[in-house]
Image (cartoon, rainbow, N blue to C red; front, side, top):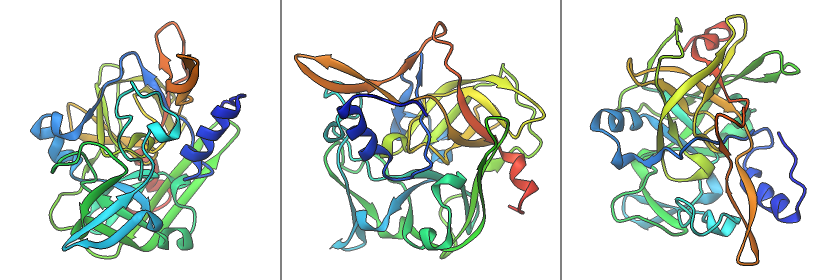
Length: 300
């Protein structure tokens, strides 16, 4: 993770990354391809229904309306993001992302949940997204029926071996079955190529659900448990499924990448904009833990 020197940068990092000590950065490659879930095709929206936000319990307010819960957090603008950037007025309640792999189990990044006690203090929310009258602000309502708790942390690893290899996943059993959406299809015999289009679904910077397509494989070492991809991903996307747009199968779990934001000075004030990687920048790429590697540690 790169070090930012300015006080403003440190403040922003503290706010954005206080969610998880082990969370690593992500970035935009070329143009920012993130869109609201409702703007995607119906096919992709159906897949997105099975992606959840990890939210701390303190962010919830229950009982504000029958059958509804309210999520409260700072907006991107309040965290120091420039007011002309995408989604700057939206709430940032999510810490990480996760996805359904069976009616009772979700997968996420291992650095997002590291103990049963930590798991007990989180909730997982499906359909935390823009819609139903919500467009901006510090609060967003979600259906209580879409809020799940942790029954058991089944398996978890978060180990980085001096850049040589990575193991980063967590398998969680929810408090009850999810009956209104289907588990995602997993590619457990990965044969991903540079010709495959990748998309990522999750909660960049804690925002309501976003979808970013046009991702590509950057490099793949068959001997390593992860590959590098060009994906528009941010803190909060950790745990997001990386999906093959052609097969609709999960190819891996987003775990780390290049630094999210960079400081700029506009009208005498400093604020932050997403870091943009062009082909000339030679950014390292976003690390994606291969989905089949999970089977080396537990049954899904």
